[in-house]
Image (cartoon, rainbow, N blue to C red):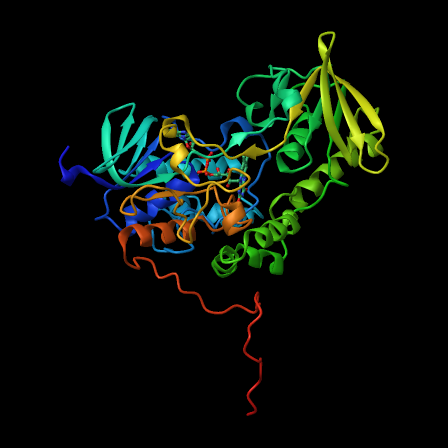
Length: 435
Ligand SMILES: Cc1cc2nc3c(=O)[nH]c(=O)nc-3n(C[C@H](O)[C@H](O)[C@H](O)COP(=O)(O)OP(=O)(O)OC[C@H]3O[C@@H](n4cnc5c(N)ncnc54)[C@H](O)[C@@H]3O)c2cc1C
């Protein structure tokens, strides 16, 4: 392959995060040779969790491009206009966009981008003297730089992993096949958004009428996402940049303290749930077949006849409880992992004590390869860039940061004016000038 066919940037995966880079490269850096490989032929956004009445936790202006390029033709507003429903969208006065609509927007964008290759998984990546060599389902490519965007992997506790089956599953699989909860005892483990979405749908009989429905959470209560203004300042470029400059231990401490800014249930979802419970069990007087169990940590799962017994410990007393179930759904989140195609390069990437990739300010991974060939990573920097990293909120800004770095010039103006919050101390005395 001649050098004129070398990609400047090859993306592994085209979920929203890499798709955002692809969209911005397409509209603002057409001379940069980029290609993003997505194994799904039909792009869809977390299809295994696509349930009725589920919504974005993020405002729709935080789409693939708007925050850095509101003139891009790949914005959510362009999508609405092209689908001729902008006025009806506005009239609907939606607090948040449904996940179904956002997924459709992502698919619409992916299909119209020439630099996104759908149905083309990356099978292998090697490095030689001339840069990266990628083998995909459709051919071989060379690239100067890579961007890893293959997402996270569903995480199950070890004790559940051993019993994984159609009746002991991770939340991420729930919508993949038809399920029958009719007359079954169903336990949902995990008290954040996907647990809430599954509990609400089970309560509404989406999979049939369960005999019992129990929702278990390790948290003290079913806690709301903090969506208030000052908390949302964590989701700004300014905060993220300054966060990256902190020491590792301080970053860890801060991220832990900010948990509810990103890992909670939207107040709207909690309200819907509470009203549904009130109406069904208090107003209509149904037998109380659905119950919530906060402050319980699931610690063991055993087979019991055709079903399971789940053991929990209580956060206040340490007391053990046992829950019999025919179906157990673990809404226990996601963990970092590198795709198999990177097996040869993986040992060369620098990790911290927790096994997370070490990222520089431009989301470049520290590694022992040549500086002329960089590996960027998205959705990999909660520990390095803060709680906004796994979220949609700053994806356009992060994409522009990466593209500026790849291009070697400021294709996107990312300069921000000062906000009202002074996050860091200064050694200079603070003073007010007399008028
Ligand atoms: C159900 C759910 C709802 C969420 N809702 C919100 C929300 O409302 N607001 C918010 O801020 N955040 C939300 N998040 C968090 C985050 O924004 C999403 O997880 C987001 O999808 C992350 O994007 P990604 O591109 O990193 O990964 P993914 O969306 O997982 O995409 C990765 C892509 O890589 C592809 N891929 C994997 N391996 C290969 C390979 N070898 N070759 C080619 N392609 C490959 C996959 O097919 C996939 O399409 C949500 C997360 C989940 C799970």
